[in-house]
Length: 582
Image (tube, rainbow, N blue to C red; front, side, top):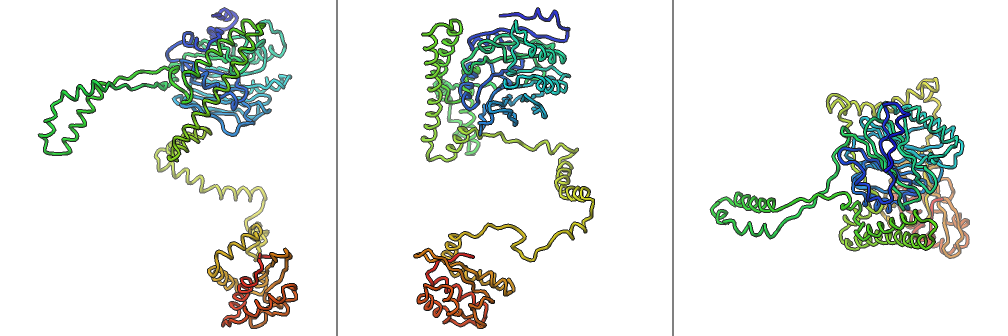
């Protein structure tokens, strides 16, 4: 363990940077991190959350201590459609991406009372700020492509000035090397800005092969310890911080396994005199007595075993064999770091790492495939499985806060309803003020169209839609359409538009357009189809159309417009030509 408390000689009494240590095995964290009420924060450059999230879950499984906040950087959020979830954690992420590999994601334990802020108007960085009772945690990522740090330092200063009152922790991948012996001016300007706001680095260990890029800077007087753990998830190490916070840490999620000694239960039940149940004349009372005896026997022979986080599966598909496989991979990685020139060891590690990654994906896919196949007849379980695969399990958020806007729930609801009811009036007032006019002048500017179809846009009717509707609806369609014709006051221009059809010959694919409107000349004054004029349009189908028109003109109707409609419909049905509205 490396003790860097000696650096405090150059600092004031308001800062504590604690102790820091670098380890090769994630399983060693339990013996180093303090037990009790501590806020534990883990940050990891994940380099695509889609690709490496399964590996992250295995890494968290190997930790024996549950993390309160998990900060992931370089998440490639621009390539992510559905963000993964972790049980018992709330998820937060940045929305703005500076490049394809940008993005910060925070997982925060549900028992923590926290407010997450996404700073706006920042340049060359993305970050999230988790605000607890008296501690602020900034998860940050700075893409390496920006070589000039001026915009970055200005944005960082803009963020820090709003969160200096409480304990402050800044963690993430800054892509600025602060290792010992680094004399770069860009490093100095960055550390000067953070020092102005009381932040001090808790470690300067290498988090990649040759650089210290994943930082942890704090401003606190509370006990704190830092661990830099070399992992195989990416080429970046993960950084874990443990900060004493007795007053803000909620109760951790503790899992108990219930174990019932059934042999003892049976033995105890055999020793009971059951005749007492027969003496009770009331069947309900006898049933209650029986259940009480059985439950007492079960409770007295039940023990609860507490499971540590290491023995508890974060994901159901993570098996003990899979964890052993990951541990062996980590040991090979540790050996390779100590002997990087060993070619045989490097080949062995790379092959084993790739095999582990393939096995990890295969085990996960097989688990969900088997779960879906086993529940083919249970759609509810199948949909739960689909939501789990696609990370669609969202926590239901209650609207209890809306009831506390005023002194009573009724007043709170009235206040909320009044706000939403006044949105329209407020918009109208804003329009009048912006245009410097009155309501009467605005009304006179509106051109009122008498054509009802001009009041909104409709897509053109599809040919096949008309055919299907006319075939399926039959006589009922004719009845409804006739009612529509009568309601339109039977104006000549409406009749002309209404009875405008386009005919298509299915054999020759030639199209013919004719109009049966009142002023078209194809309908006489008595409502009969004029055969000669119609045939001039239809042309090649003279013999067929001649017979159809003669058949359609046979029935007599008392109403002229009904006659027009019926004969047009008859012509459409008997001509053998497909119709669509022109």
